[in-house]
Amino acid sequence: MAMYRKLGRTSSQRKALLRNQVTALINNGKIVTTEAKAKEVKKIAESLIALAVKEKDNFETVKVTAKVARKDKDGKRVKQIVDKDDHSKVLSDTHRDKDGKLIRKENGVTVTVYDEVEKEIKKDMPSRLHARRQMLKVLYPVTAVPAEGKGKKKATKEINLVDKLFDEIAPKYANRKGGYTRIIKIGQRKGDGALEVVLEMV
Image 1 (cartoon, rainbow, N blue to C red):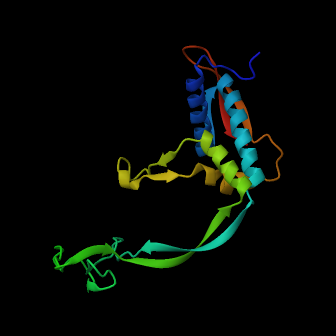
Image 2: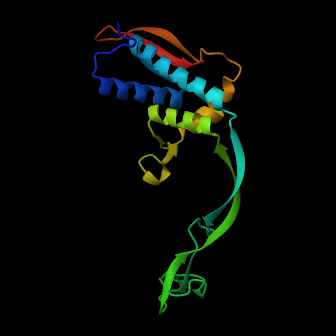
């Protein structure tokens, strides 16, 4: 007897379907699906949340020095012209004149100006890093598009679901021993009569 439902699909199709639904559940908090699919998704989602709860505090904060591009008042990168051979020798503090035209200097190249800043980052301990990789094996990348910037590629940003699991979801369930999701029956689907349910986080 199989330990899982085959859902009338080949193994690759089934794996893709379940990964897709687990990703949607963690991103949105709830999904509407059939009862058979919900029971399979529930197993995977609960194991991911349990992993996040177990490893949520297993990190250390480390100070690092990073190079960050300097920005002007419009939010654009500051560029200057430096000598082609000796990069420490600045030929011009800007690469455009007052009219916005590019300045050309003999033996000069345009480079972005960088500032060194000190940042505090979370460094995963080995077991948390392993948990992160286990989650990434299941979760698909998700891109969010803001309502006002719809259709514009610039407005989109990638959501880090693993960080969401560690930082938002895990602290919520820290004192709970399992049972992170619930299934609510909402009746039969029109057409094939399959029992539809809402799978949501408690």
